[in-house]
Length: 548
Image 1 (spheres, rainbow, N blue to C red):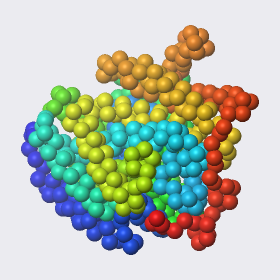
Image 2 (cartoon, rainbow, N blue to C red):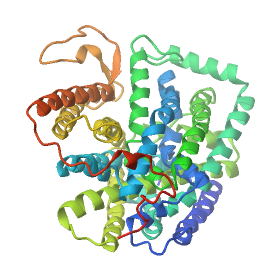
Image 3 (cartoon, rainbow, N blue to C red):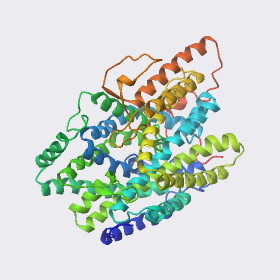
């Protein structure tokens, strides 16, 4: 540890953290069914969450600690580019409104717990379902690691800024506690804690966006300070407005992120835990309230510029940690007691999504790898036990990212995760409406999209950090090559890699589908029917919760 411990902030942080820990253990009895030895109960909370619980659960799942730390930090360092998070969340809910209703219905009829379960039933293909499951697990792991980065930024600001295991000790303690109560209570723990997390976040952000502009001389002064900073930036993409080269990248990044958001297994988990279609409808209508909060939050990046905030140096690496910008600004501008509340809000904001993500990854492992390949005759209790153990492995695997890998690298891994999860869109989202794509086409499309996406990401450097590979997701069009042909030679206009990879996926899937149909290749057995996609709460077709 380096520097003095901020004791007032630490005490308030510890008290609120202790409160949610108690809630996490109590949650095992909250809305409990007959047993937690079933994935319906442990991994999906009994599939009976109503509108309010689902709203807080999904909001707590999607708006994470890293969101609250990284979005304003990106605004602080790059300007308008960082605001992509706002249009992407605005786009997401209308896009996913109908597909999520269909996914909930078919999953309740057949007892599906994961997106890969649906793919297995829709196409009768073990390879395709396994691909979807493994993609979901791999894309989720670095996402959990990023929650730790958000939590560590707070701990570092409170004075825990050392290197090695001792420097990470508070983080390890926090995640041991998280692991234990998630193991015991399952999805009910983050669902209950999400109430506290969201209330704290709303209070902190609303106070900040009212108090800080008054203290710093108003929004005119804040925007002027930000404009002056970006005018001096050597990067042509930094600024208060988008430039001609990054407008396409901004739009495609927002669209790609919106398409990917509810393909992530943790997002699907929150949806499948809801009681009925009406609950999902209300939530997709009400969740944009979080987008308003996100817009206010992003502007704190400009506020930090006007306040003259500087990032804390990470003693383990010797580099300034931009993730500490917002925690440091709170520490500089607010009294200690309020700063402690803000730190607790960010810290608890890491625990809720980390718990849901680990549960979602554990469900995928248990249903689509363990039961599919290792123990086909596993009972419901054995499935639940395996999921609990897997959730521990996933959590501590994420901790290993922080302990043994440069945090900047884990950020790049999350970027890779976004490109990866987009490649499951044809097999999951499109399959909810049509089975036109042939299973071999879907596998071929996924392979091409995944390989080309990774190759494109590998070729992107980051001049700011000196990295030659995996330096971002913005690809200059001149770098696009189709078997040696450069259709956009000389163009510096940037585009989001995920969209390029997804388009290649869809094109290849369509071509192979046409060929497969002409050659009459078998296309698996569809265990669903059209009525399954419209079933609602109370429908006799629904499979009983926790049925064996």
